[in-house]
Image (cartoon, rainbow, N blue to C red):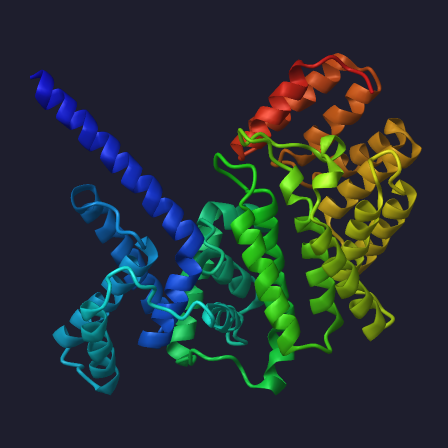
Length: 432
């Protein structure tokens, strides 16, 4: 009985380890897998379905066979085999199926863990996938939801939080978007050069939200997902190469680079967050800061009117110039947030402006702005407003009020690391 019990425990541990590996593979490699499959089967929705089936197969097989050395390659290969089987069952063995089958036979004779895509061109594949998701046959909300779900690897819950809407709404948008793309028979290719600018706003919106999810994960055990953020930066740089005359592409590159420069200083070895005021700025990546500076100069030189990404890049540049929080030009940042609110009004922007005002003019001045925002009902179901109110109340010495706000913020937070930070703040004494 003891040996059988130990065997069951080992099997359970093995299944849990496999589940974690599959989850990590999908989170990191989903866009590459679906992009590779879309290129072969020519159908965006079918590619995702095949990938999901292959992931389910991995959960069944790997606890017994072991995790392959290249999990993403295994998933892609199994998905392609399923595509061939499905077509054969439907008596649709056309030239495309024959071509894929031939490639599969070649692959079977090669090492099983060779990547099924050319690592030098995968960015182009993923970028094609983004442009397809942002096809004009879809509305903007559907474009963003579909791309974040498929390319960004976000769950429906995470996408819903990004848009401040119910999960069911996001799920319906994604399903309808896939059907529209299939009905329109959208080819898996970059649009012609003359059509790219038309989709640019949606593409940049998707890349921005991908980066934001990498910067601070909407949910889960990790404070951030740096691999997702750096993928977004890389794809934005590719987009800038495709459309070098578009200032907002360069503005977004500048914003991402200046923000990603802080990544080495944002997390402790145990995974706990390090907030801006406590970061060792000597660890900020100077090469990324220089990239941000160059891209910002390019964006500003291309036109006089600044877009939302360029203004945000200017804010990030002010932080990058400062040696510490005290020497930061918070008045300049508050003005820039006012500019951003005019370019792209948002309650989150107004909340950030309140933080800058609090740093420049004192916590009471910032609290007035936050209270006005709270009274409007904006962000009522999110942790952001009580988190900021708690900080400002604490600085004013109003300990009990601050503690209540931090506890409310912790209850609303969906990221586990963020929740830990908020609960720690609720336990600390009030004061500057």
